[in-house]
Amino acid sequence: MIFVTVGATKPMPRLTKLVDEISTEINEKIVIQYGKGDYSPRNAESFPLCPPKEHEEYIKNANVVISHAGTGTVLQCVNNQIRLVLVPRRKKYGEHRNDHQIEQAHTWAKLLDVPIVDDVSELREIILGPRERIPVARRTHEKGIINELRDEIQSV
Image (tube, rainbow, N blue to C red):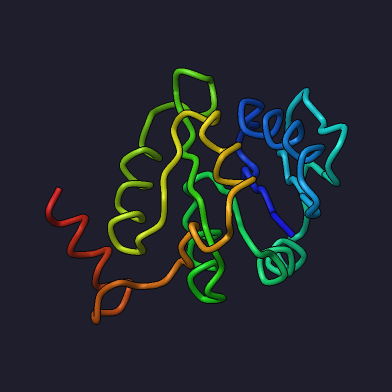
């Protein structure tokens, strides 16, 4: 199962529309948590929001998680060693008030060796390609993740 999650702040229709379209091309279940917005996926199983425990269960049961660069989701993927692809929210698409998620995603990518996708059209190849090409979210350094983040923040 592929779990797509955009969090609760704002919708990300550029992500949810594309993945919903791709869901007709793949023989794997796709579940999309699409947030508060006007677009409801038509092909994939979907819902706007869910309780935290249910959200965590979707992550635990996923083969791949495609997510905005939200810390909670990223840490759950690390804790459960789930394949992760980050699609940071962008101000220019009205997905956030600023572009802090781009920097945040680059920090996660450096610490966890996970891919970042800015142009969602790149997702088609990732989703339809072999799962082994998507890395499992895990620490790449010996230090604890909190210390790694602290060091990364202090270097900015």
